[in-house]
Amino acid sequence: MQPIEIQPATASLGIGSRFLRSSAVRRVAQNIAALSVAQAATYLLPLVVIPYTAAVLGPKNLGLTALIQAVVQYSSSITGYGFSYSATRQAAIFQNDPQKLAEIFGRVLAAKLLLMAACFIVGALVFALSPSLRPLFLPYVCASIAVIGTAFYMDWFFQAIEEMKWMTIFNTVPKLLLTPLIFVFVKKPADYIWLLLLQATAPFLTGIAGAAFMFYRLRGNLSRPTIRAVREQFAEGWHTFLGSMSANFYTSTNTVILGSLSNATAVGYYSAAQKLVVGIQSMWSPFSQAVYPYFCKTFQSNPQRAAQNLKRLSLGVGAITLTAAIVLSLTAPYFIPAYLGPQYQHSIGIMQVLIFSVAAVTLNSILGLQGVVAAGLNSDFLRVVAIVTVLDLLLAPIGIKLLAEKGLAAAFVCAELFGCFCWYQTLKKRAIF
Image (cartoon, rainbow, N blue to C red; front, side, top):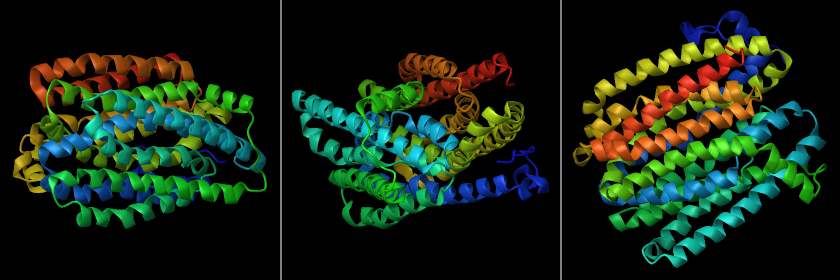
């Protein structure tokens, strides 16, 4: 694979003509285009229905929906186990070896199914034994269908073989089919259960379709994984699991903490702004997923070139996202009421603060994933994620007590900015920066 020349941000995102001529870059560009469509279905398409669901459900039930989805996210994070990073790194090295890919597939699927079963058992017990949670058991079950999709969805495989078009197809089609049904079935506040069910069914169908395709693609090489092989796969993904789990944990826990210290209405205001921010932030994900296999391989074959490209990428993307965040923060008083409706005026201040997490989270992704994880610095990755997680969980209650939902947004942004500093120091210490 030829080295990628990532130039500073200029016209056409700063990519020079020689860069565009390389076959490696053409493949990355094709994958970015494919993933952009998938990402639009994952995050941008739901932005179309946010004004409708926000108006129909109201801040209280919108907040209740966000709380249930935050709880389910714990199970999804555990089931995913960080294989999107660890298995991708493994498979990217053996992308031309069908037998090795089949072995990794069998191990990962078995590991995910075990984790999914454990999550369902624990979740059912928690809701059955808690009188206050028992009325929410049905909504929880509806939302938990998404966890099955997480277990079967093997995004790492498509990333590793650098054929993201299949991710686009399996991600986009279910969402295009199910999103219009939200307007059909969600007609009153109590219909938040339908919203949870429809939004969870899309990743379920995506996961089943992706697994079926992989069975077909690797059918001649599939074999039943041994217990020892599954145990080794758990060990291989342990560092990225703890890292991804910590990141998802504090993101979801922020919502849970806000609900416990405030109420569902406050969560609704925060969730409305957060969904917008996540949708904007998702624009970076296609590029991140497309270049991750490249950095994994290049850090092995040519560490110096990988480090140079990482620096250029960090500076270019950092400047773009920070500028965008400033513009969106200044214009929030105008587009939030028009987009969400007058009853979400309280979300304006939250959005003005939380939007800066776009720049921080994007830069964290570059330095942490494309840099530290791709370079195989697993211990450093865990250490930084643990620091940021603890800092966020310490700042979140303080921020809520001082400034309510806006304080939570400020706490999250501060934690992510400190993460950027930690990633930079780590890369500098390892002579990558």
